[in-house]
Length: 232
Image: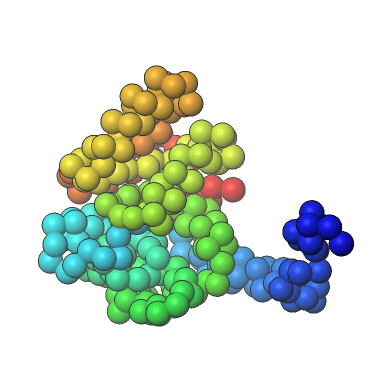
C-alpha cells in the first residue's frame, strides 16, 4: 500500500451505523410534528431574539421585556428560545402583557433549562437546531432582534435570506439597539452594496430602532396592509 492509499479516507470509517442514521429521520419528524401541532394552535406570534448573557436589569433586558409586553398587548404571542437573558426578558414581558409566552428550547451541554416565564403548555424542546429554526420562522409574524451573539445573527440572516430569495413572503424584521448594530448595518449598506453581493433594495428588508414603541409599530403597521398567516 502506497502513501496515497494510506491517506485516503475509507467510507467505512464513519462512526455511525446505517440504522442510527435512518432512525434519526424519525426523531426529526417527531420534532417537526410536535412543533407544528403546538404552534398552529397558538395564533399570530412575534419571535424575539437576543443574547442569553444579558443580565436582568440591564438596558437591553429591560427593553426586551417592555417590547414583549407591548407586543402582547397588541394581540400577538411571543416566541423565544426559552432560555435566559433576552429570552427570559421577552417571556417575562409576554406574561406581564397577559399574552402567550412560547419557549422553543434546545438541548445543549450544560444547558440551564427553560426560564420560569415560559407558559408550560407552550414549551417545546428540540435536539436539532434546524427543526427549531423552522418553528421560529413558520409561526412568526415578525422578528424583533436585540443585541446577541452567533445564534442571534444566525436567526437574523436566515430571515433575510428567506425573504430575499422569496422562499417566504416578506415580514417585518426589526433590529433593536442602534449602537450595537451600527457596525454591522454600516458594513451591509456599504461593503456589501459596493461589492455587489446584495442589491440596493435588500437593505430595506429590516428596520433599526432604539424605541420599543417603534419596534412594535413596525410590526403592527405591516399587518394593516398584509394578512396574518403562517409563513409556509
